[in-house]
Image (cartoon, rainbow, N blue to C red; front, side):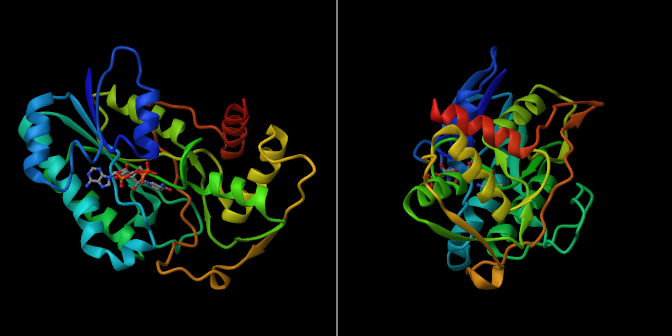
Length: 289
Ligand SMILES: NC(=O)c1ccc[n+]([C@@H]2O[C@H](COP(=O)([O-])OP(=O)(O)OC[C@H]3O[C@@H](n4cnc5c(N)ncnc54)[C@H](OP(=O)(O)O)[C@@H]3O)[C@@H](O)[C@H]2O)c1
């Protein structure tokens, strides 16, 4: 099976390259090789490589910056997947597109199902929602995988920012009234390859690690697991205090609750999802070794 990955330099793009299953021929393209907002370039890449499956890991992910870069966010998150869907249809490739919990407004207090109506709050969520709608309209058999609170062992993300700050400071305030689910890129890569291997997969799936947490809970867990793994010195004391969203204003509104009901299952067969804290422990332990 030949799989073409877009956004190869991103958190997910790098994990997909590391975790490619045996028997998969991977073509990994970064923005410098393929700008997904350029339809002619997308057509030419699919024509050249003729993949069986395209996994779109490219996205504009700067949630706050998107509020002032609306056109840029839409050209990457809406026009990009639209271009990929049109080209996949033309060249007979399957499309697996990655989306976000931020397509929801967070007004629920129980996990969002794949049937729930989307209602994004900000430009980033709006642009990702427009991408989903375009993909479904052009290629109804496409797979859309919504995920949330993504982190990789390396690179710029909440986990690595917290580890750095916890090594530098002795006090941190972290938002405690936004609830979601931390998700390791390795979990997501496993789910995406499993869906790629199953021709029957189509429609919307939700994939995060298991469980739920606030950013505050997540920070406390990073502190405890960071100490246990040696990434934070055992004698380094940091006071982590819960704060509210109102205490930490940001340009973009975020959903207060965006836990997704997981469904990574095709014909009754699925992948096992582990609790986010257990996954975090394993990621930090292997990062420390
Ligand atoms: N990160 C999260 O917390 C989170 C949460 C929910 C859902 N998601 C979704 O998960 C997916 C993967 O996210 P991620 O965390 O891996 O994102 P990421 O680390 O920001 O990576 C995105 C990659 O896309 C590339 N890119 C941007 N514009 C492009 C274009 N026009 N053409 C081709 N490539 C382009 C970026 O390149 P440059 O480096 O050159 O900009 C970057 O390498 C995305 O669909 C995202 O919306 C992420």
